[in-house]
Image 1 (spheres, rainbow, N blue to C red):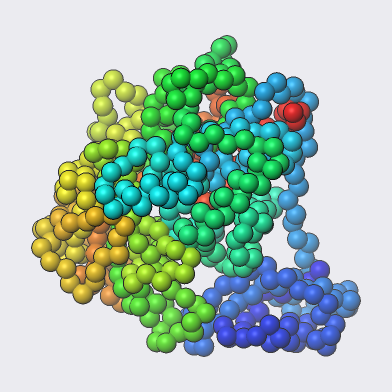
Image 2: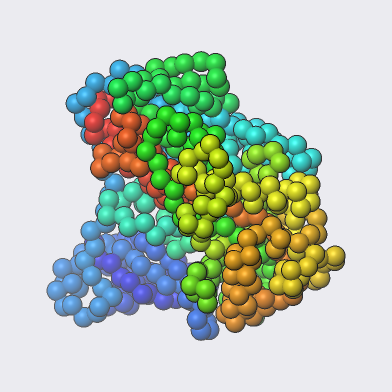
Length: 534
């Protein structure tokens, strides 16, 4: 196989033009291009005309002849990496493995275990995807929250109500990333996610995919139990023996995979009481900011860009004068700010997009990293210092809830910079799921965070014209960017309690849908390597 890199074509090219370009690059007739596969496609908008930049794997009978000449730095031999499913180990598995959580980490772990004959049991505290969507929609309309089935909890995890981005920076010598994307396609995702540089699915498509993925896991022998929260565990001689469901039912467990998500605060407290070794970690907090999507697209692509490009996104970072960094996170082109609360009396926001990204506004989290030293002052008596990050998150969310009595607090950037309550909107009108009210978002945040965001927005205005426009909309608080704790695991991926495998974003080992799913594969491999299948 031959790989061609840096192959450029105008974005509105045809399939025939791509094949002709491949042949021209290889200096062979078009008919000698037997087949090709797009490995990656990115957009180069640095100058007009905007182009697609490809990596292409090509099959041709002229491979040896082409490679032997060594004419171009962008033409090379390619040996695509294929994911290898794990072989079973030697230890006896007396009961099927139990997976707590049906987010990306839990689902993809379940997929591998089911495929390899381990018949996993998946426990999910929330509802299946369609029922969950109904409850979330009802919450956004009424403000009535189901603490166990919301934007954070339920089938698909927190990523279900997001932009559904599938890109990751995780190094991948084992082909896990491609296998995750292949499984998504198998479950109904468009094949283009296999090669797009920044693939995304959108909430509406994700819900359908989740249903298909669950069906596939069940067909292979997995079992799902919804509205089933792990409320306790039994440990004997340093080894997990059983777990409690909904404070009513105990089941035996030999292998327990914790794919609990970053918002399972009650679970973290329970695990801490059971003396699992955990450690506090840095995470980030901030706000959501909204701009007109047309403004962002014009800044990124120019006037009248080709429609195939869709709504433009951005990624911004800035080193602050105080030594901290401020950056955009979970950017949602043509998306919505959403009320992402999961605890009564506390309010958090997130962003989401539908597949077509057709909303009027672009929104993104703007966040600043906080360390254990920053949030130690929020320590609550009678709790472990390991959980201080949760206390910090909760305090910010309580202030956000109190600001507008459960409605999302909203503020114009100009008023945020002046630390004064907004009393009217400008030309930017909010795209928000859930009730909102004009307020003073800055008062919710610690001064160091508010000051850092102001400096960062001014800096970003020099990179994207209009980013610091006075009527840009700020809402808060964005507090659930990642888990505030990490459950320590060893080289075999087990925690300090034998038989417990921390997995995914919630336990500190991932940061997004794809990386969490990849970690699910990692844990499934560890279980398979140790145990015989059922």
